[in-house]
Image 1: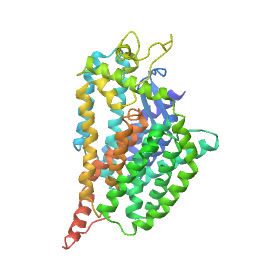
Image 2: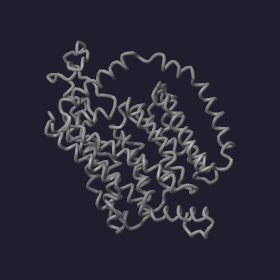
Image 3: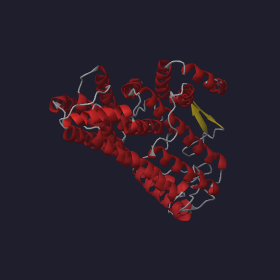
Image 4: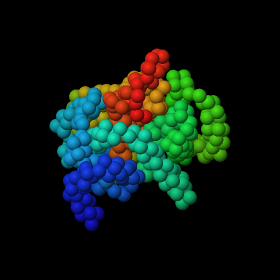
Amino acid sequence: MKYLVFTIAALGVIPFSFLLSQNKYWIKNAFFGMIIAMCLYIRTSINFYSHEAYRGSARGMEVSLVHLMAFSIIGALMFAGKFKHWLPDWGYRLYLLYFLLCLPSFSSAENLLISWFEIWKMIMLFFLYVAVYNYLRMSNDLKTVISYLAIFVIINMLVIVWNHVHGAYQPHGVFPHQNSMAMAMHLFGPVFFASYVTNGLSSRIYKLLSIAFICAAAATARSYSRMAMALMPIGYGISFLFCVFQQRPRNWIIRILPIALAGMLGLALMLPRIIERFASAPEASGTTRIELALCAWEMIKDEPLRGVGINNWGIKINPPYEYAEMAGRNVEIRGEDFADGIVETVYLLVCAECGIPAFLAMLAWFAWYYIKCISLMKRLKNTEWFFIPAGLFGGFTIIAIQSCFEWVLRQQLNLICLIFMFAIISYLADSPMVQKQATATKTISDGKPALNYTA
């Protein structure tokens, strides 16, 4: 029945797009619907040709309500003549390059259908990418998009509270796992924190972002994810330093003091469980991570250019393939139904499955946005948008480290959150409205007449 309802919804995308195109406010509401669909991602996603028992990064041709809303927005913008670009900048082009360099791995894949599942996921992400960017270019309403993401974070926290009340030890909110939830909160939290440091509570939207910052930080701590908790000071600290020393906001000390006091109080209350979480960590967890990393290295040595097949790790790590034995993995634990796990770092996973060229393309894709944050901080200094690249630089730093130790950047909802922020950076980089505001601010600082702009 669920598949039938979903098929009917998919067939309605084109007429729904045409209806949305008649009024830009309807498109805005559809965009908000995409955010709500993210909150319901687990409940509104379907795996066609599903292999639910497979130990891989994709288990079917996954389609969710988020994707259908993205298709609807793209169609509405096309019908309205507001669609701008498929590949607006090098960020999108590097993603396309990464996608193309993953395709040769089909030639070494054991199961082509399972490989296709991951390629399908990458295609769906690209359309989401395009939908968010083109919506921003049409609406020039970045404040609303940021406020929508803040609402997403707040809803996630409300779900965590619900889970906590019902006895969950490590609640994961609207995400499939507490580690993936913590990573997403690390992505959004420093952005909302930077907004609070630079803008305070000067308007309703900044009050909303400040509430979202508290929710993101609390959700990360409540996940009891060891890596996430250890990295919190790094990401938030980097964002704080950029805000204070580059933007130099007024009254930042007064703003930080209550947050620091509340943070210390919260830490004191949660400290016993945090200590317990680190003390009770199983030694086998670290051993398994190292052994699987060595297995990935054996795959890379065997197939350095094309990899062993995208999304085929779950096949190649098990017999009759001997990568585990070659790496010294303890294979005595294997029973008749045993299926070995997936390597925890996305970098080794991509390198092993798709080869070194695809791995380098993925690194270039991530690095482009990381570096773009630096140039945007210089360009948007003393503007209302400075907090976004400043916060994202801290958030990206956390994610880059966390993804070395935890398998979080192959999970679909995490990638959706990342794509949202990538699209926002692309919009900031080439939006005429934002650039006009940045030029006006620079003109004021140079002591010359300022240009008029719409904030």
